[in-house]
Image (cartoon, rainbow, N blue to C red; front, side, top):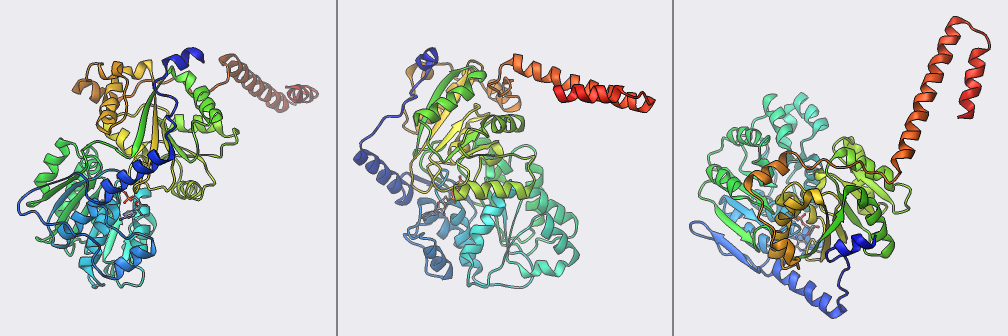
Length: 488
Ligand SMILES: Nc1ncnc2c1ncn2[C@@H]1O[C@H](COP(=O)(O)OP(=O)(O)OP(=O)(O)O)[C@@H](O)[C@H]1O
């Protein structure tokens, strides 16, 4: 462990005096809410508002203790209310959901029979569910009706298409919407289309679906807006082709996370990770609630199995879990019954938790954007957060990617990391396609694992022999084999 400590970069957090912490919090809040660094481009820019315009939706926001507009909201409200297309890039946790929901509801005002008038598209079901809940809270006591188009209610709406006429706002994933389109859904009344996590929606695998949806929105005056915390230039170019004379608003500096204290931690090899993680918990360096990101579903399951008896109230979420189970785990984490949530990149984007103190990248992320979205699960709505990224020898060629974000966000990065060569485009692509092969997560010695395997095989063989003997009617042998089984 001593050797590992020597290799560690900035493991220990600086213990700042309370006033310094408070000052930093205030600074962050100012940056997020008073506008901070804002760049607006496009023809005839629109002036920002200073507060939410008076309406029922504002009253509902106040009930949720949301009073001042965040920077992105100050710009998106007048832009979307005047039906201008918008490309918006603002940091994780800066209130982008309300930034599009509020002006859309404000423009729709009240219910109109006839079909969806606003479409909100997000890449995952979990995110749609979260947006839906926020939209429901905003529309209390108003006549605007919101639906989340998911597997179960799609079937109901398909059987009785007149039900669709009842809703003004539809929140869904691209796949679900395409399915509904193919079974007769019409989008000709749509006045607003929002693409949340827009860069993901314009990525390979999603872009064709996004295209099909946009072509189905035949209203010539449809207002399109794209929101994300990361907007790579390739995606922006694509987005510019679907938008009409858009305004582009960038809050803060692109690809930074200023509210998060970020650290890199060299852990030697994959097999040391669990031990180091446990040690950090024991030392109090990791305090709940935390989100721990791993590379894939198998590793998520394995880490969960490894930590489940550690009395740290661990939970796990990944794409193989059924929807109901996912929702249950998320609720437990929100309520504080789960302290350590192990997750795959499924959870990296958009999901909003209050009070997440830290994000641990147990496995190195596969892209800069995945890094930004993952660590963005902490440090939300003006609060400060911490993120630690483990890296091994195999990850070292990619470390510079993350170091760049850290530096731009104002975090300390050891000079030797900054002097590493910049990864080429090819290296970045390679990482995104196939991450490094990782050693299985387990702290049990391989001798123990082999012993267990041999034991299992032996039991199987005995059972097989016993049933064969039974079939042949050999009296006594079954009894003997079963007696043998009891001794194992
Ligand atoms: N004006 C505001 N004042 C205070 N809190 C706000 C305000 N706007 C939004 N919030 C709160 O901030 C949190 C983060 O908001 P939201 O989930 O919309 O962030 P986001 O920018 O979409 O983040 P991400 O990029 O991770 O999706 C939410 O809990 C939300 O209720």
